[in-house]
Image (tube, rainbow, N blue to C red; front, side):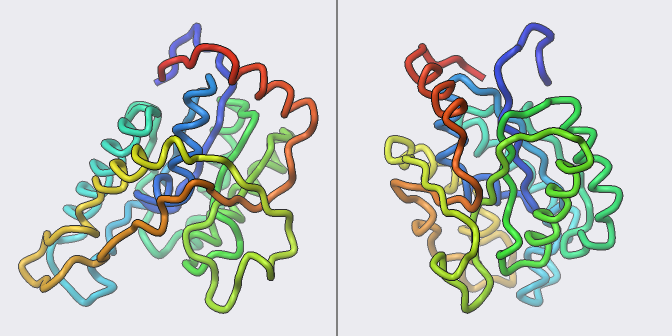
Length: 243
């Protein structure tokens, strides 16, 4: 929840599922908090179908959704964002396209409420259909809002056969080297992937997410304007504010 006197500029992030906010731009979120920005997060789907992809019936979807939301809250605390800066829309995992109109309305309302200077979402080049739909929802919401924040797409998994060199849009890189340990600690909260949580599991769903812990995070989108660069440079010289 935002305090009435909190006038920090806002970075608004949209995540298709609980964990995308950490895997893609987690280091950048930690950096933005340190630079004096307020980070707000919206997680669009409930992530409830995680174990269904492997054919497992346990844990039940409602339990999976609860586990993953709790993991995201813990991860955001570690990144410095704060669990109270995250809202969960709980739309059906894997069915976001069917709810795109309502989600666009909600995203537009969030944009109008926070008036962010920077918006982060997945990109249209992602493999997962919910990730692509999230990018489309956010782009429409920004256009309808009449605002012009810097909009960058973060990467979790590009569509098969694509590489960064294939993309037509500009590529931006954020130095996140000093936040690698913090991001690693945040990622380790996702035990629904990294641990054994079902009696039908013989191994974790993911062996390691170490590939997401890098000294740079990559985004798709335009370079910041000179005015934006100057403003960010001024903010980084100030004492970081807590979330």
